[in-house]
Image (cartoon, rainbow, N blue to C red):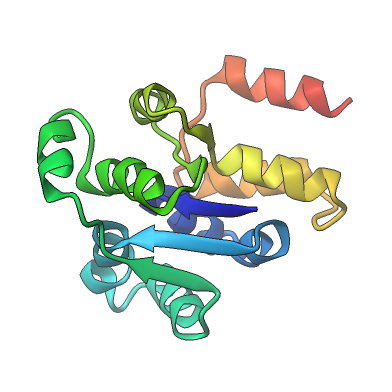
Length: 162
């Protein structure tokens, strides 16, 4: 399965040393230019930027340019440029799966008939596949690097593990 990712999941997975789980779960990971710009070009000295750049250089993450700029402009507003380009770009590439953490972006993706998953969903899949052993520890690490999650959602995810 191929997937198009937004910035925040890449950044947070990098910060906890789990960016590699994407390559173990998905065949190809695509990022539109706005995501590349936000994750790599705007934060050149950041460790997460270095990791993401390394994955792009190795071809494990594929950067692409969204073609339909009119659609991007029409969708812009409440969504960030990366989120908009993920949604439009996935549609252009014929990919039905996207990685988005923001609820408003996920709802918009649904309107485009896209299936979205967030950072926690990625870690949950990795845990179920045996790629990572201690899911709860990864959640704690995420929260230590300022990942925001509602207590209700956190409890629901933890309950689902049992």
